Length: 166
Image: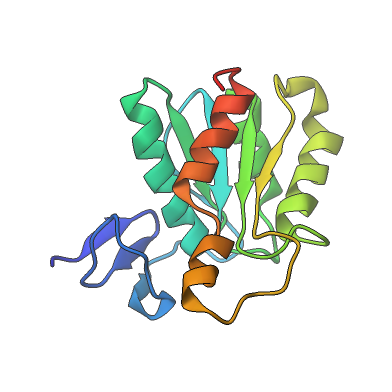
């Protein structure tokens, strides 16, 4: 398979629908501490980092087929976190879904949700949604691990909830 540019990453030898191994990603990121807009949109902001950016882009493709334009923010760095990029996008779309592979308690996703609620509450048309792994131990079985990780379908479902399309 050919290399594909996915957000700020190039997927080496993999298809867009395949589950990726982080060793397959070659970072072609811009300046340290600055997020990148991986996809422009106007209806909802999807924020992710590393592999979850790819999940956001996959969800954005599905949403585009439904006429929903999702903006994908690739955070690229968590410390420092580019709060301005997140807030600018949220103020444009008025909705936010943050995707992270970690469990929800004390997570980056919840920290970003709190920051947006604190600094852009009046700009939101729907509650911030976080898509994370469940609050449980990481399973050893690969079949269960697949069920444990966030998916594009969960992201699409969260956007549908925000837009009142259940």
